[in-house]
Image (cartoon, rainbow, N blue to C red; front, side, top):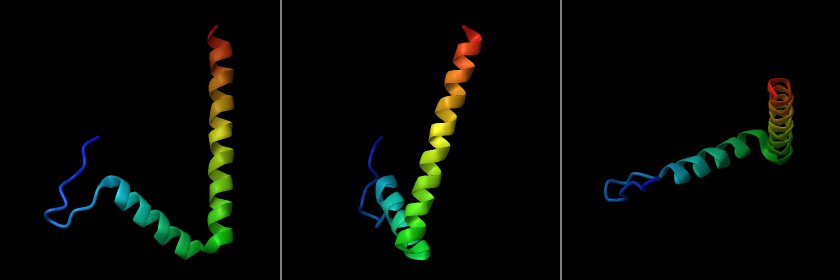
Length: 59
């Protein structure tokens, strides 16, 4: 992934993501942001389990 030039005041994708994450944390507050992270982690775990089950069915 290449970085964008800062000559025009552009920000990198990483910088934009960080800025958006900080804004979301400000909206939700500390506890709300933690809850959002837990929900995301649970969903990732569910997807991993679904993938493992699918793999077992195909073998």
